[in-house]
Length: 401
Ligand SMILES: [Zn+2]
Image (cartoon, rainbow, N blue to C red; front, side, top):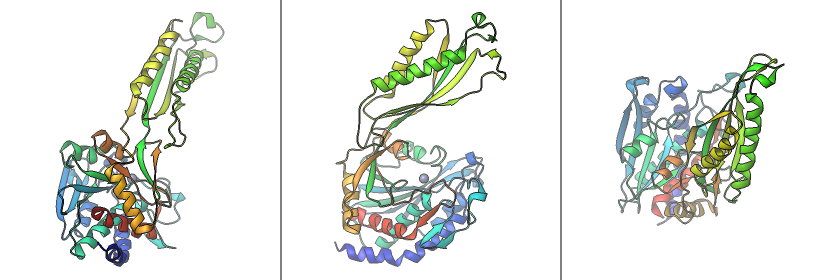
């Protein structure tokens, strides 16, 4: 296989890519959860460019959205093998945020200095268009890749993936032996592949004492003081116990951070009877979240001996097994990067969750990769046209290696 031909073909799609991405930015696809109308207009527009692909649209009902559905578009190219490499990108974007911080209109693309500015340009328009450029290049050359290639343009990534990836997984759209690439995160050099994520656990602590006047503390039980002691003790015990280090991650350890604190009383001279606070835990895959919760329970019991009552509630939890570094999808991605860009890529882990976690949880080996300056969700979000084209080259080669 002469990869140079493929490379040159993708190059020919450069202007097409810039134009398409610019147009997509104007088709504001914000989730109803964030006050928008959903992704239907964008999906329908995209479908015009899918000639030659086997196309399937999976509409998931959502009365709140324009057209009453959240669309997911799948475009396939059959390869010699039935086994499929998926490139999964998302149609939806986040709102513009504070418009005053934007130098250009957020939903009108501005091309300047080799960049395309606009909401959704990097997240996730760049990868979406790059994957489409790759597919079109393969089709135009009339090539049959070794593996089948499927592009998925999914809904609802920014607000939970209920109408997107999660639903597609439930419906069995992804064949068991699928190789999944999620190009929705990465580094400016494009030389790192994300293969693992820390588990996320959000805990809510409600400490109940007895409210009273501040001049007579003996008549009450100060929930504020108890909460502070409790949180510090939980914090200490967790950090002392979960000490494993994993150099895939920065920082290499699990983190346990007391964060939000709810307002207790309105005035200074009242001893609060209730205190509510939260902790953000990011736990290495070496540990189960159950172990963390169990330890918190032990500390809680210790504190309740003094007459207080403490409630520990899990507000959010999410964990997924890492994708092995020697898994096929990672090896193929590395090989494509080497062939197209001479990059010898490494692997890393992330402190937060991407939608790759849904795939990993469902048992799919998943590589999260793209070449981005990380301007997602920020004012003046942009995509570098170089990254758009170079990532397209990687996707084009992927089903051939
Ligand atoms: Zn994204």
